[in-house]
Image: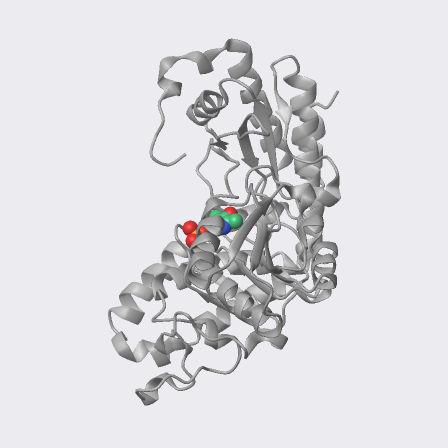
Length: 423
Ligand SMILES: *Cc1c(COP(=O)(O)O)cnc(C)c1O
């Protein structure tokens, strides 16, 4: 049996332990929802205040040049690039994940169909994040294509002659299951299919190497594991072999070759700047840069490889403790045990009461979240483990609270059965 002392010993040996000090985490809170909204970097309030009072308040329009506002999508993009196996100059931070998906999927369809007119199908997973499926549905309707949804294990078999693009999220938001990016990309390419990867639950959570995987297009989210703050801008990467073939469906002036010439005709920028659209949300970019800098602070301590080792140790420990200490309470495991197939979260299942159990945990200061089940799976209690700031004792305490909620049956109280707008 694993003990509290074992967990404390693991914290004592953790080379990444000091990184927790880079964040403001409310005391008495065990925050296991960094996969949905990351915690606040300690540097953020002062940095955002300076952007407001000095750069905006005093510098005003001069700050586009003097405070480096104009280059922020590229500067932050370079910081993201190092986390996803992209090169400097290949990534821009801009817009939302949904909007960036619209751009890259539109580009992927155009590129794929230019060379092979018989291809008119987009394949994705039925359990993909809904916004990805909605954007794909809208684009397919617009371009006379068809969206074909399959189960996780059927993706490779679905690479038929009429498929143009495979659009996948590398780590499933609901189960935490991880795709082998390289193997899936190779199988798709062998069938003549381009691949769009959504890295929303990957960037900052698992090692990603877009070039090694020979990926085509990738997008991802700034407010989850990158700790960029609520609604932080997202990022977009495109392999250079496709980059200049792209025709912007959202041809805003920031994607123009020379925005400040104010010419009436559109001429796309060279390189990844072509994927920008309009004026960027500077204050949000400033906050996101604080989050990216906390990721970069892990570099001298072993970087993404060390974060991954710790993430797997945390999720292994959580699974082990739940199985040792909460046995007999009807909990199942939706997340793969295989390290090669697991992201940085653990999803427990329960046929009854999952939502109320999560609410009871939140009332006790353990924040996870609830995701409704589907035809293949019961309801899910979802717990994200962000190795930058979660410790092994936190895992012990979270399982202890879960055990108490289940042992006492307190989750059955009526106040835990009310649904709120955001779950
Ligand atoms: C979180 C998430 C998004 C979020 O998209 P927004 O445009 O930021 O709302 C999109 N896709 C996936 C897979 C996600 O996990």
